[in-house]
Length: 232
Image 1: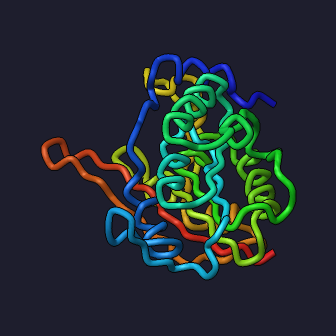
Image 2: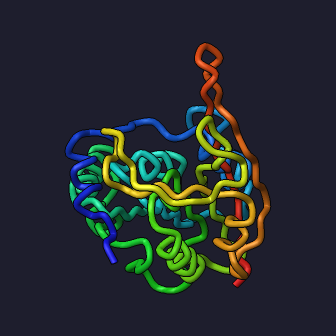
């Protein structure tokens, strides 16, 4: 099975995914469930006993959510398929004062995470589990459950078939043909496919479908934004 490593290396070398600010839904997840920032150096903790709690960014890219988690006072880790992205993330983390980031940000596969059982309290993943074959995403979910503590929290988002070219219930897989992320996989989701992805390892705390429409052209796309609790 191809895991499209070369395609992702090309994508990052083309700077397709050079984003330096955290996604708004990950900020919302962090503020609601982990820690809310109320001042420059002031926080309200939402999760008990946050000292030394670890967060994993699955598919971390160049490290924007690793950096954000670090700035929020969490012990931040990341993994990505692309060696190019991981090196950039490590270099960025060094400038932010993260100690030994090469030990925390790793190149690897989401279906074979290089951490022991129950290592993390939190995990996040933006635009990752829908950018692989569904069979690989299923294996990745098993790994996320393994490395999360019981009752650990996981935020992820998934592209919906509810867009200008498909329908709400569309759940197929296609190879990306546009210049952006060319040659990679796009796996579309409906709620039934989400339930299959989650399996018996997680329970859904939130599942919102957010639609973005271009009023001038009438085109639109939608993404599911999901918060899960590990119940293994």
